[in-house]
Length: 160
Image (cartoon, rainbow, N blue to C red):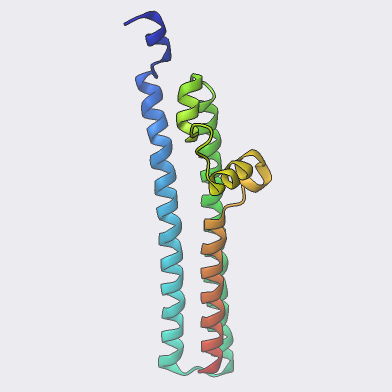
């Protein structure tokens, strides 16, 4: 091995840390899905209780309050996980900054010029604008699912 080959090879601790970043991101995404699924399940459970006990007006308000509490807590946890993932991505980008040029292109997923598709151009545009890059469509979709479930559960409870 020449000296330049040694310099461009990533250290074993660096490689392990870089893989750990990916594992952390994957785990946090799975947690967001799990939270969303359990939130919808809990709201359905509250509706099931409302259907079983046929509550009076005060009981309906209480059950709707429980649904709203579940909704608020789930949104808090979803946004908290998103903040955690943002932190992990920042650490990962900082680590990528120490890579040589070829490894940086590989980490970014750059393609040779001339083979870019429209979606790749849009993706590159959002990555180059931090305010758009921090906007995560996945999080918006999960929040919409939780919010729609809350609205449906509250409406269904009020109609029992």
